[in-house]
Image 1 (spheres, one colour):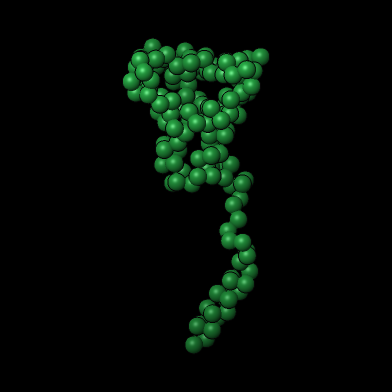
Image 2 (cartoon, one colour):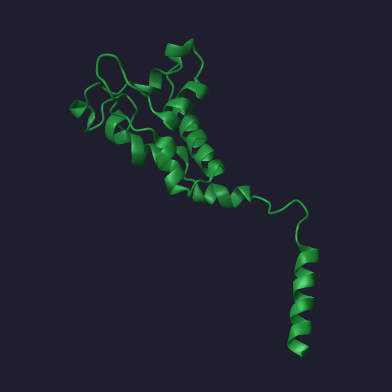
Length: 140
């Protein structure tokens, strides 16, 4: 009986002390889980796009369509880095091309969703980190 009263007291204290708006997302913890853009680029992109994002990675010659020079994205979009365009390519892939059929580049969105157990915030953070890194590589 004494243990039941102690357990009830402990549970009521936990409920009273719990945050009112649900669980808060700790952005610092999220950033520990989601790697920086440079790390992800080296791990996922450099094999095709090259270490310097010029489209000259070790697998580039094996692809049907050569990977683009990612350092000229801003130059090819009126001098402004196209965050929405790049985010969509990363999330959904480049889509089929008329001349070459299905693309060689994977859609990273579903892969990141699997990595992050369908945590949309983590997926969005991954894509944002990659975009920020690519934006930092732009030629002026």
